[in-house]
Image 1 (cartoon, rainbow, N blue to C red):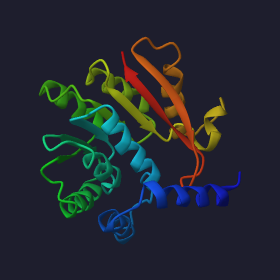
Image 2 (image 1 turned 30 degrees about the vertical axis):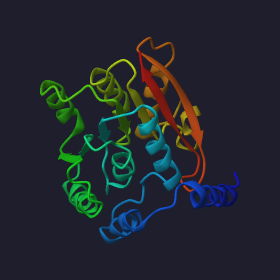
Image 3 (image 1 turned 60 degrees about the vertical axis):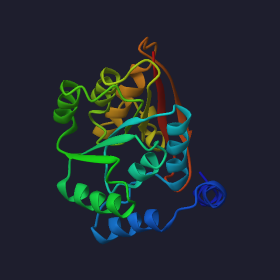
Image 4 (image 1 turned 90 degrees about the horizontal axis):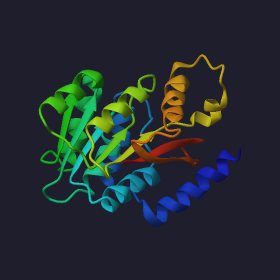
Length: 221
């Protein structure tokens, strides 16, 4: 694949529709400074998340996987003044970095970062009646992706949009003999979409600075 061309085209797109301000640029610096993995969504993907948030007129968002808060900021900025975003992060270190970035973005009143294992926190959210959510973005560890997706359906309403990132993994999902637990995790999610009566879904391929990957887009029925 022509990764150089993909990166150039993405830069072209960013310059016209997804320019980063100083707050978003500072998130990248915070990731490097904290020696965290540079695995945030790209700027154009962040803008896509923002557009989809506005499209479904979301006021209540659930995010699985905060990292440094880059996608969190894109999503939260699309919310109305009464909006709320709960973001789940397993790493205390990552959550602390993200919290500082959220504060720098003046979004502390909108974003609630919760630290812990998502499969422990999701039942608590359901028990507390904090759903249903209008949009749920899954971008966390890959092995339990199907479990996360099933929980997302439980925390949704008809019309809720569920987005799951990194589901193509440079085409590795085509390998039925893979031993990679990340690939196996997204394969299980992708396969669960086949004839699933609970969602109306598709998978889109993405290319660019994040190389060859994809997202699940699913509307809860």
